[in-house]
Image (cartoon, rainbow, N blue to C red; front, top):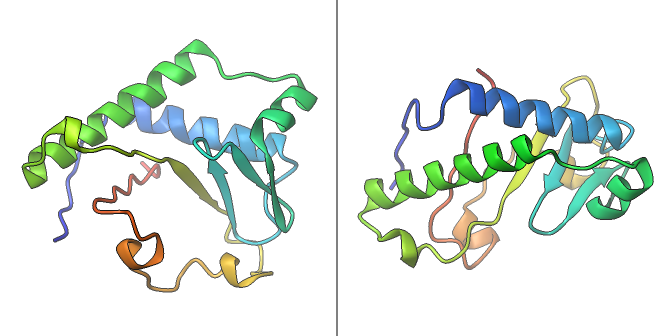
Length: 142
């Protein structure tokens, strides 16, 4: 099943998360070499050229840290999305065991360098990732 919902998170929170991702990609010297740059908070990695680097090491090297406001916004959005999935599919929130989060920052001016840069291919999360039962996609373009 697929459900599209509007206004699940406040616009200010979406803008704050977009700013966070833009900031991290800029701190990683522009992120990946191709159009998408990935910031994976649970894996702790970020795109850098044609590979991933450890996000914590990058932040330590650059002497930067998440602010309390950034953390609060991220956690608030995560909870809003979990509640939306719970309500939409009738699944108790406590049954939603994993909520792995990554952000894809698309720079349309870059050309694809690897097959992973070709973000436009169709895929099914349950086939690609195996353990995924529910996936949320939050557009940060407001």
